[in-house]
Length: 190
Image (tube, rainbow, N blue to C red; front, side):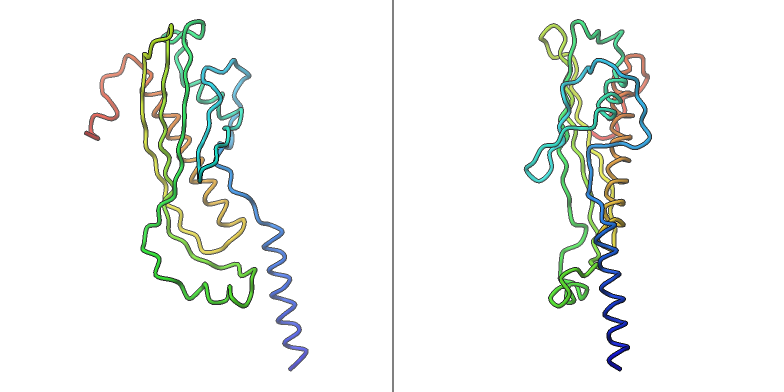
């Protein structure tokens, strides 16, 4: 009986160490698969604000936002822009407590804690030409995150949600900056 308990304890300890070793941090500043050519940035360094802290976007992502601008309409000699992104998390259900939290009192590295939340981005864009505001846009994007495990599995879900929102924000910005369009993307949101 004692040998069985030691094997069970060894299994849980090794699993917990493995989960801790494979944990990955959340990174809201990247978009995978980008290989943008080196360019002069049109936008000032782009900051993403989350939890009272600001982080600058990855250089490749900033180049992607620069590539969304039509420089024949907004020439870089006279125009510059700035973008700020505010990130927030909203719980989808009222937190009533969970039975999964009970083992946290006994096992401090308990790897299971379900969440159901929505990651939200609010992006504000300004373009100034010759010192005058010529373009302003605000976009809201959100992505649900439903996770069960802590560690790499949960952070991968959050990172993928962040990447999906950055891709949609890039597409929306590029669309809004096209002057020869027939419809306004935000017209249906009024």
